[in-house]
Length: 196
Image (cartoon, rainbow, N blue to C red; front, side, top):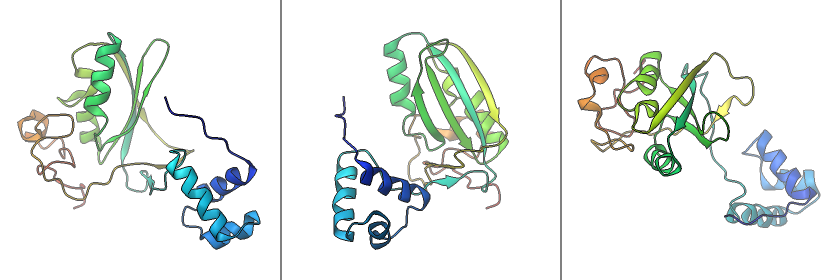
């Protein structure tokens, strides 16, 4: 369990400024908050070290023409749920894994370079909903994102492994052999963006 971090009004203002533009200079943040750039830097270091914020590049997946879907899954028990989270947590196409209470106990937000590859994530061997221990699932293809439009999509430049983060081999997959999937970006089998 992570410990709670106390935020004061200045912390909130600094975070708000960075959410609007993550490249805002410390001097500019200081000017907007009435602090020195050194004071802003100290506060940011505290927030980052405390695990409250992380500075990263988020991607507008619609500008890349990526296709996205939400997958809702009911996993048979807590142990299997944890195993699936561990199995898929490093998948480059999964943007969000979240446990739920209610009819489904796992939500997965995925994005892929094209519809064929998205379908592989929904129907193929690497599909979370096809794994052992799944009682039922539902898939919703996303038409448009309105807020937010930028997501922490993992951009992997060139994979070096034959085995994907979920433990599968793309070259053994029927959809990959039929050119219905670009393969996992973390592997040597990745065919790149459709326009490459």
